[in-house]
Length: 165
Image 1 (cartoon, rainbow, N blue to C red):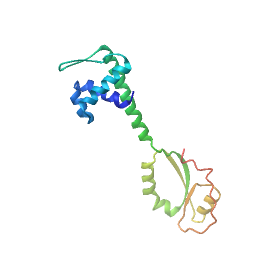
Image 2: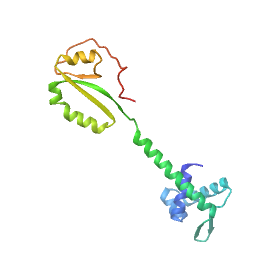
Image 3: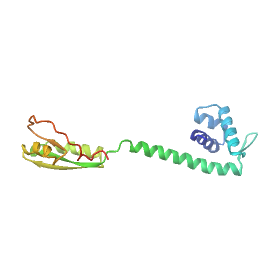
Image 4: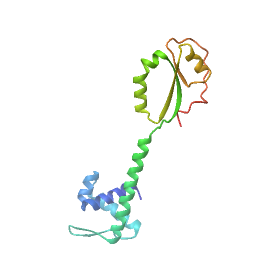
């Protein structure tokens, strides 16, 4: 059984009309009828009594509808939750900054970052301008922002980085 067929069955029960269920799903009434026949064949029970314009669920149809609607709801919840998670960035890190960046440029950027990634905890260490370079080289911080950069040999150590848990 496919989730689409369960959804279609639920729509059929809720609208109590093959035509309205078909319209709701952008398909023909014939497709709804075929889907119902397939479900009834798979289950081995009649789910809906058809006669004239009267719509009536059998006892098997009532039970099947209860479970089908719950499965459809759980499927929608699962899809929604997975899409909400996406790529989750969590953990934390150490940021080294010089005093003037800490006072002037960092606050609005830090606020924006925390709104976008609330699960990330950034600890900010500030110090004198020259100390920022040494903090990075000594692996005291994961990232350093300095006012006056100087060219240093590139040494990258990602072993401390735990932003992408």
